[in-house]
Length: 294
Ligand code: SAM
Image 1 (cartoon, rainbow, N blue to C red):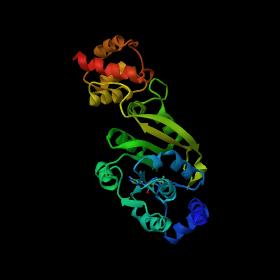
Image 2: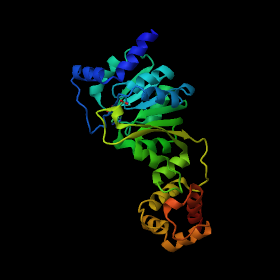
Image 3: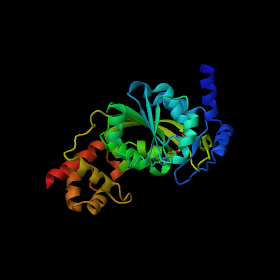
Image 4: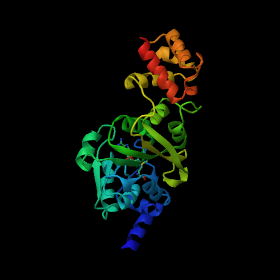
């Protein structure tokens, strides 16, 4: 039995086997759906091992493709629920995951499904992990949506483009930080787990990738008086990178440049500071100071 599993594991990341399965099902890759399938046998076992699947009620996967990661997840998780947009992959998945009784494939668009309802129905509302080789065209909305959803998630382990990985995980106050990284650090402790070369995919994309893991925080690391206002201010602050934070926020909020400069001085920052020079504590203090100054 063990030897059979081993054979199957290898076959699912074997390009010639995959080509044969795809040809038999008459499947053509869709660029629009971000279909670059993993064929490097070292990646999926590592993602499955490092996503924390064994320590929560189950795993939610986004975009199972041919099932190569799904299969690995099914070996370590109690239950795997995978959301796939492309219905053409369903007969393929039926074949490649035929021996995985703890896997359920759901048809749908991850951006449109009610994930709270799904987690309630499939996992009894218990804490789960997310693990996925994300279609790159929806990286940010998926990550931001999951982080801000309040869903019972322990961690989010995802493959993203290498440059996106750096941006998403950049600490506020560092050069590469943006609005997304500020939100990521507010909701989680992010880390880049390992790089993945473009040659690990079929067809190979034009860029390299990396696997990141966001460990959801039980409590945010800073207190903000009004979360919605805080994120609105953060988005405005990073919206025009060549401008000072005061100019950018003034252009994207109800506050005047003078009010913002006063608030910056009050929190101990320079009035012509740029958004990427402010750490999370300073961004929170700035938002609180502005909120209570009106
Ligand atoms: N997990 C597989 C692997 O690692 O080989 C496939 C990953 S491929 C990069 C992305 C997968 O997400 C594809 O199967 C694609 O059809 C699916 N997909 C694309 N957009 C989606 C969406 N909005 N909701 C759910 N799945 C989506």
